[in-house]
Length: 71
Image 1 (tube, rainbow, N blue to C red):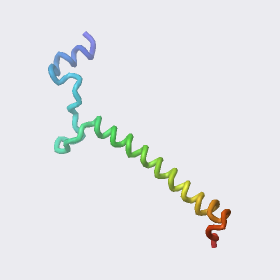
Image 2: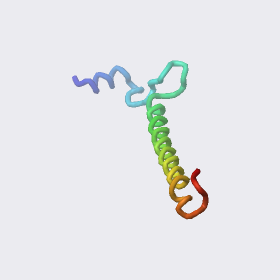
Image 3: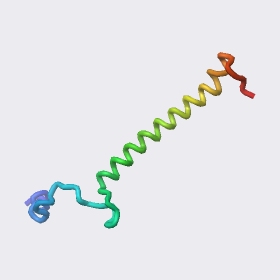
């Protein structure tokens, strides 16, 4: 008998459902935590890209068009 079949017979109705929690008193499943990490990582990289773009505008583009001077 394979591992998946044994697990299915022992878990019964709960087989295939995401019921594992990070901590017993925290109502967040492991799948939800992984999705949160994925989204927060994506938005972090977007923020880093925005910061780099703002720096390029302030440092190079603004002075090149005469909008301001870097002192």
